[in-house]
Length: 134
Image (cartoon, rainbow, N blue to C red; front, side):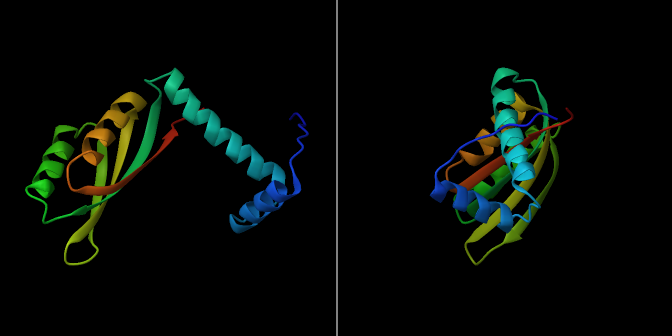
């Protein structure tokens, strides 16, 4: 293992320590390693679009939106080779949240997620990706 030394201002150091404590890190080093791993993995996807990954796409939508539930369902079936599973939850009378787990080449996973989240009536969407292996 190599030792790195960094300097940050007091406020940033305090915020980092609070973040690390809230995440239950035992020390700054492990917290910093995880941040670096996360940032580097994002860059890996851009440089190598066929990097195998697993991802979770979560989105909130209004199920009264014209044919939206059907469109989302059809898109999920169209991408059955990428979608491992999905979960649907009723939030209130009008809104639902779905979480979809995807697995495949990053570029294909990202394209599928973009298609789902860009449908008219999807109000919020967030994609979390992680490379597989390495």
